[in-house]
Image 1 (cartoon, rainbow, N blue to C red):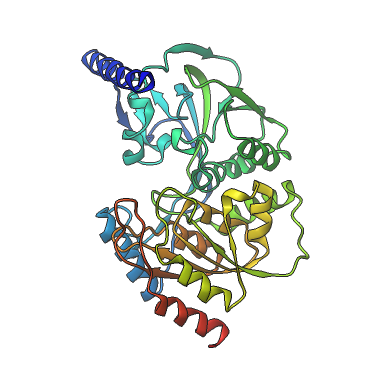
Image 2 (cartoon, rainbow, N blue to C red):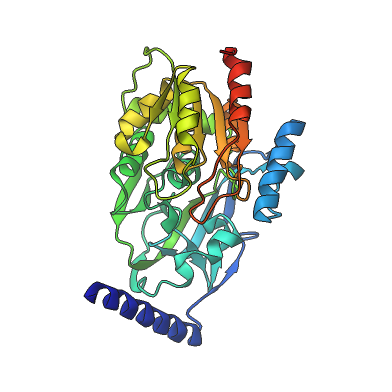
Amino acid sequence: MATGFIKVLKRKLNSAFYVALRLVNYYPYYDYLHGKGEKVNLTPEYELEFTPEEKAFLKACAASYSYFDADYALGHRQKELSLYKLKDVTFFSNTGVIKMGDKLIVESGMSVDRLTRCKAFRDFTVMWPHSYKNGIYTTIQHSHWADNNISLWFIDSLPRAYILSQTIKEPVTLLMWKGAHPYQKHTMEYVLKDSPHIRIKYISKQHRIRISNFYMPSFVTSSFSGYLPPAVSNWLREGVWNSYDIVRSNPKQRIYISRSKARFRRLLNEPEVIQLLEKYNFRVIWSEDLDYRQQIQTFFDAEAIISPHGAGLTNLLFAEKAQVVEFHQANIIKGRYMLLSKGLEFDYSPIIGTDGDENEDFTIPLEELNKWLNSRYGSF
């Protein structure tokens, strides 16, 4: 009872603070980097090509979400990989977002959509001022969503370290929040081990820091996309494999990733799915039962991966070469891992099920799965 009362009181106090901060124009507007600072381009932009089947799937993704910007059936542009050399910025340690003058910079939050949902717009705890006038600072941090989300870490955040490693030669301090998960610190420190001039400084999340010289790496990915250019994914894969001492001589296996222990997006006819998959020598795994090295090794050893949509599919990045089947609920279809598979040149097949219920739980058509299995491994 007391805990519930405290939660309600906190919500009311937060709401009152937000109203007060809005009245004094605490919330800044946003701006773009065009014409600001020096831009160093590492690679040019280019367009991806899709098959008719891929276009149809991506169009279904956009229709289920009603977001035009991510309708990649209309075309997917891989952005330039760039480093922006900026002067006099304010760094928000809770998000990694920066402000120049009185405006937040869109490119530091990936997109307008993500920036306007970012805590830098509303978090009154980021009050303690600091000033770094000497030296050069940078970050790969990407808002509060990547605090312990492997998808946002390995697809949105860590790839930015590739740009730093390829462009920066002088001493630079990389700012990262000190509460980062051990796997984040481990992978970040390892992929940058050959760049000793990039020093990592772990800081708290309660600061807005004035910085005289700031290098901002662009995001490699786009909103709702998991596509990574091969040069980036190869650099990242090799770094993570080596950091966890992955064994590369194990026999290949077929795996099904179950979400039965998750709180949502579970497969309602999973017993029937598993019964079918076991005929084709698929092994059932629960990612939450494995430590992170075991997850990486399991995916590296997989020649076929089947799973409902979920962040665990980020580990596709660490499969050596795999066929992928992803189950989607009909009313929320996401193309992130199709685009990740595209960049890795993996054979990818979506299977669309029923609409999800209030917990996003759904059923997939067994005949579609059986058809895919027969086409790869023959019929029983």
